[in-house]
Image (tube, rainbow, N blue to C red; front, side, top):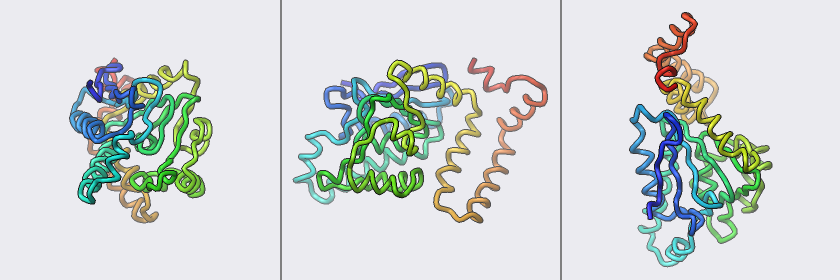
Length: 262
């Protein structure tokens, strides 16, 4: 079985689908490595303007499967470290990817699956979905996602989720900012496609620079963040797409990259 299905969802939009529905799309090592590889393969693809991360079946991802949990009990420190590094590389690939990544979430997103969703730039969830970092319930720690949550959510919400391991529904996930929007199941694909379409119409260079800036500025002081912002501002001004975008605006026409995608 192909663990990650890659297909063109729309022009300029690549969909990567977790494909272990019988295992509730659990993130074992083969899935993690294959998804990381698929993401890395499209970093420099000019035809890919946005990525949608989805899942087969009724669950987005239920975290680790039973086989992975059982292997942790007897694994050596070196084996556990290697497995942890693979997941860290996946999270890093999603966060630092130059393409914007939209998570399409149906069903449960739990533990590592919830962490994967949190790494994506924009998450759209079925209103029936559930979210949670349940690791502490089995004596584990949601360590890899900690910095992401601390930078994106209110401190009290982070502590509640990570310390209790509680599940929350999609409307609560939307309220605290874990997901961008929750919608009825019938509207999930329509909403994902609308967001992906807006992303593919934007300047790829500008989106990549903005995404990198959002990552780099987290935790910096005001002076350092303004200095970094000024550097990125200069880089953006020098880019070909910025010059084309300004010319198109002044000439009251569509920029060349948008005409090419329509």
